[in-house]
Length: 59
Image 1 (cartoon, rainbow, N blue to C red):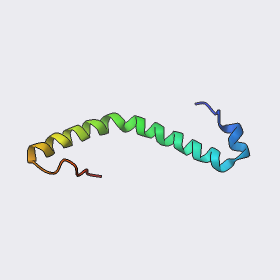
Image 2: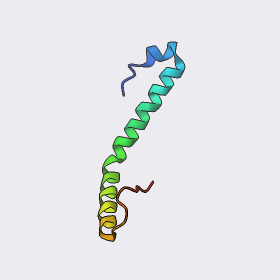
Image 3: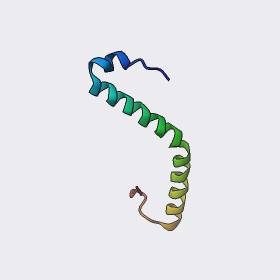
């Protein structure tokens, strides 16, 4: 794990913390992107077979 933003983060702690949180969020998203994409595809297929509104998305 690289800490390239640590020097800048020391001068501006809020910015450094925000950047770190953003990196953590991006890592989590990339880890769960594939299974969630597969779930979404199954959901779309089920909905299209039931003739429900395709523009409404479940949370």
